[in-house]
Each structure stands twice: as C-alpha cells, then as structure tokens.
Length: 257
Image 1 (tube, rainbow, N blue to C red):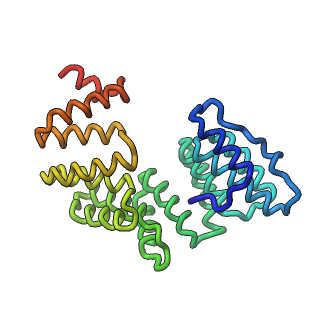
Image 2 (spheres, rainbow, N blue to C red):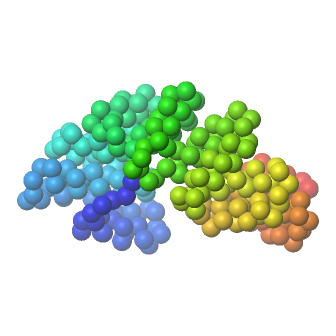
Image 3 (cartoon, one colour):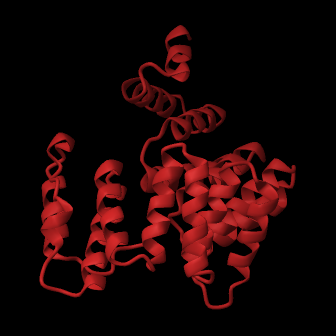
C-alpha cells in the first residue's frame, strides 16, 4: 500500500525524517490538517499522515491521526486496515481482528487488505483460515501484487515438508517482485539445503540488496561461504555480524570459536 497523494504536511514530515535523526521526527497535530476542504478530503489527509507515521513506526502519532480521520469519515477501509496493522505489530491480536473485520466489511475485494489479513492469520497460526485468504489472493484474475501471498503459501508448504512446492511458490513470487526479501531468503535456504551453493550465494546476495544485512541473513551467508570454503568472505560476514549484533547468540558463538 502506498500513499497516493503527497500533501504539503507529508512532505514536511518526510523532510524532517530524512535527516536520520529519529528523535527529531516532526510531529504534526491532527488539527493542523483541518483545512477548508470537505470532511472526506480532510479525513484522507489524516489517513495518509497516519500511514506515514505507521511506516516510521511512530504508532501513537499514527493512531492519533487515524482516529481523527474516522471521526470525519468512518467508511474508509484503508484507515481501519492501518489501525489493524498497528494493533498487529503492537501484539494486540484481538484488536487487530476487530479492525481487519471492519476494513473487510467495507472493502471485501480489496486484495491489499485481504493479503494483509491473510498474513495476520498466518502469523497467529490460524493456518487453515490463512490458506483460504491466500488462495483467494492468488486466484484473483486482475490483482497483480501476489508476491506476498505466494511467499506465505511457500512457507506453509515448507512447514508441511513440501520443499519442491515451496520452491515453486517462491519462484512465482520473485517472478512478480524480484526484490521481495522473504522469497529471496527462503530460496537461498532451500538452495543451500540442496547443496546448490553458488545459487544459494546469489540469492543471499540479492536478499542483502533488498533487506540489508539482517542477523538471519548473515548467519545463512556464513554457512554458505563456509561450505564454499571462501574463508575470507566468512571472516568478513562474521565481522559484520559481531559489529551489528554484538549481543546475539551467533556473535557469542563466533567469539568462542
């Protein structure tokens, strides 16, 4: 989901955040966007501002703007969806369910919302329900953004020891979005397990380009390069892991060895 319109207030927010100083992120009170426009337009601006704060993980600011948006327009499914995502990330699954239900009642065929809901169900280990929604997404004839659904179907296949089927799902995801990090990482793991080490290396490098040097990614890269006997690369990855994640179990193991 992307912001379709960039209002001046959002430009101010993004400019303030571009400095890289998280503690100085601009706070824009909701009343500042109550301009001489229709209630629906004002609500849309507040929803977009709430989305911007959500993407910056400033959930209190996001919720304040989203709740104000609902006072002006309580028929915007995206507003409910963003609140549901915040509740999901805040480990409030019951509240997330309530807001997903409201979003889907308003827009049952908005497959961005259906996809987000399916991921929520999957992460809550409600796999049977998640599968129904994920298959709805991949079967939707005119919906293009299916890479998330294919990837989570791939995760389900892996959990059920269907590695080949999982690999096909991740391949389909990457055919649509070649930079989707979840599919890249899982494909790298599969190729490593299959002993296809050069392919595994290629996928983990693509993963780093997309997601950065995550802890899980570095751990997998170390395994791949160790198997390839590229010990200079192993040392480089180990150094990066210790610097970025000094208190992780992986860093402790490197120190011991």
